[in-house]
Length: 580
Image (tube, rainbow, N blue to C red; front, side, top):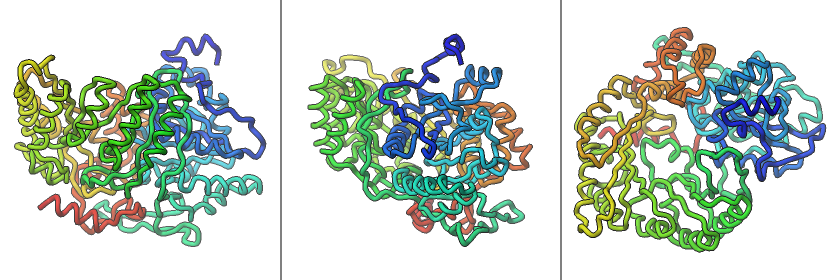
């Protein structure tokens, strides 16, 4: 690829590599070559802390060179196809077909066709059954791997759980395997009993006449276990001392430290809150040391705290005090995610460094529905918290709600507008002198998608038409000029809902959608709903069977063979409590 070719692209820096802190290694004959593949554009992938952690985790090994590859943007896709050039990794520019492993992170169901696009652009057969000994081993992990079945026909093995827990064991096995010249099948057989590893080709599924799963079993019992245990890291030990600094401004251009994995809240809609249990925190001293090193090694002017609920960190006040000292010394800012209203005293300290809006997630407008989803937040707490936020000088609030939660009624939906109105009215309880700027409340409503390993995994998802009707009603009910209201696309949520709880029969539909032109499905301007509906018809599957149907208590679910660390019985009890 010439310089002129690069300059003809929208953002050439997506494809050049050579960033500050990127790893360089001399490639030796027995070195493991691993390409970490992020199935979205560079700017989004480089904002993902998991990529950075696993990149440096694998590269700490002398026998492994982990490089990066991202889904190229449309202009680059056209160039690669037109010039018959293969997709490549950034560190060396080598074609992905030259690697031992391509490891895809599945963060979002709507990236599945991008996985196929990256394989196709690399000249690698899409289906694992059609790949030979000279093709890379295709693996995949991330939160969507907790239901691996829709992608089962494309992936050689899935990795379920904490990446740092079992990756070394897998790479050690491959080192011996590579030196001995074993086959790909022999390697897959050897890793089957490693925690977190699932090899779809070693399992079979049969179905009942009504389309539900009749039986799921291992056809290689001597090597492939009947139940796959997640890889679990009891203590968070590894964290890189630096991060790669992107050449193109990332979606989140800042240094990041990981406070914890897991969450103590137990909200019934939240998959991450269940699959990352139990809560594991890093120590304050460790985090402050990491923050200082990363700021020194990257030059960022802002640092962010990553956790499912940062304000729930046990020593949050002490941590923020320590970070404030570091940030004042280095003249950098702190960025906080969605905030608990009862942590405003600590949040206000951060505001002394940087004035910003406050993000709050009530999730549901009515108290009845908040109780049903186990969101422990009363209306009184929300309103009093917002008032204290106004009092502290925050005049821009962002509110996040979900539409289509199980058991939602029209009154629950309209309660979103009513609660938003009350939050605006709280601002005018301030004295005239305290109201320095006009208040602004941004209300966002996402379409609820039931996910595996949550109490709502049995729930029927709302249809696209019903989602859209509710969104129109809520929008019409928002009358205060201080409120802006936006909502997510219901048709995208419908496809996400199909893929989230699908089985391996959906592999044919995903492939048909890709061949029909579906890529970048998570991007509104590129999402092709009609292509997906045609793909389902081609594959002979009904999308409503997967998305819009309530599951029975005794139904065998496509992911039931995975031990995620939370029992199905516990999830069922929580589902029944939500329906009281």
